[in-house]
Figure 1 (cartoon, protein in one colour):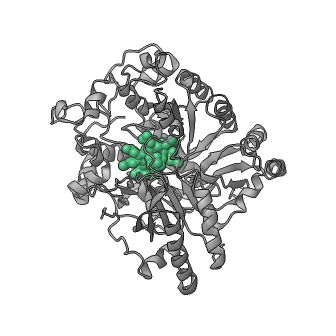
Figure 2 (figure 1 turned 90 degrees about the horizontal axis):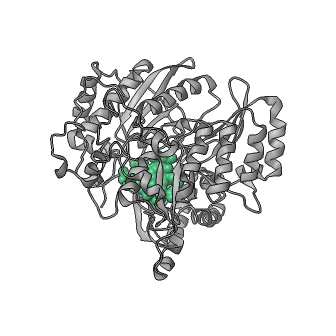
Length: 576
Ligand code: SRM
Ligand code: SF4
């Protein structure tokens, strides 16, 4: 990255490194993320990598995990945990080609437990990879021009972009900028090529990381591009969100939203979800400068002592939105224009077939919780492989963990439809409106932070809620429901109409009152409750909604009007 005017406190820190958090010292001493990862990968004594390397490989999109289903049993047997790794692909805007799909399918079958996982930030995760297979997997991805750079770590994450293929021209313009933003903001260390591809270390002319310095960012930083009227990417949950402003289908520029973030910790009142604040408008040709200016403010002023307080949202609230905006403008060298009018209407995906403005066809498939796997009823993985073998367009992963078979010439549609029918993929969209608007994070057994089930439980819970909806005549009412196995918020539960976050095995917090298109946070209604209490509460509130809602009133809005929860008006809520 090139930012000439900004002071870079990551290389010239006002506080000595030993007064900063341990992760800052680790980054600074890591030789630009090299650490001892190479040595760890060939250490045959353990299936894990060294503790410091486990933190550093996150910058390369790789997480060390263990099978939590058998953790206790392994401990009893005095064995080390069953370590494996998860690799997350860098896929800006979620668009990939059929040959990329085929390669990931092949790698998923050979090394990653016969499954692929589509994520809430529009990419693939491959779980269950053994340490000794990691390089093979990463090199396999390279064959189809994919990598896992910066899919995690204290840097910019996967850049999101509205998938809407129907607005083909506008989408192409915005998606190209999302790809550019991702390439621009991704770290530049040669460590990735050396560790994963076996490249020789090459001398660099200037600093190896001109923007990030030795300590990168204080915390993860997320960028996303929304194309109204869709808010599928949940633009207000991004650290830096861009809302496309178009005239006659031509991109003009972006409204800039800063400071979104959802992670919180139970019993830690200083942590809270916050929706992004729209601070102004920039023309499209100033996009990259804007990214540099905003990220550099967080780089230089973010909290480098307390990681629980290091996201950009806290920097903004500590310094004040006006101060941060002025600092961004100072670094940009020009004031932001007032935000342009825009309208967002939904954060879900319209499922099924549609025709784009260029006449090409697209089919959005419902993939429950993003899990691509073969089951006896739905040989989904086989079906998508068969489609990839004949498909000439693109695949697009949606921010709701669904999949669009995109850019299909009308003449090619019958062949795709036949394959969909043969593999049961056509049945997937015939689900209740609640299920179609449901989302769960991975949680157990791979996520080290999960306190309760999520992906493995939400489908059953939805079945039970469907019975309630049926009884109240609400089966076709679109209501968003999102579950996570802990309060970190990976399925963005705090901006759904019904949110559930795990507290302990079988116990969840229940949130109500979120905005249907992601414009308002929900509020906790019940704390630390099990399934019977959840169903009882939903039966009562949904029944009340069915009886007394006003025409067009959403469930989230009703939950506030009827007094079940107070409206969150500040764009953030604080832990009670
Ligand atoms: Fe997440 C950590 C999975 C989207 C907030 N997230 C994790 C880890 C890596 C657990 C860990 O650190 O060891 C999870 C891996 C589980 C596994 O076994 O796969 C994990 N997060 C996911 C995914 C796969 C959920 C999914 O089911 O799709 C999503 C991957 C997105 C991607 O492709 O990059 C995912 N995570 C999110 C989102 C939603 C978003 O970004 O739109 C959020 C909330 C937005 C935000 O960042 O504020 C989110 N994940 C977190 C947090 C809390 C961050 C915070 O500010 O407190 C953590 C924990 C952390 O960073 O300390 C976390
Ligand atoms: Fe894991 Fe919690 Fe994220 Fe779910 S929300 S994937 S349990 S970190």
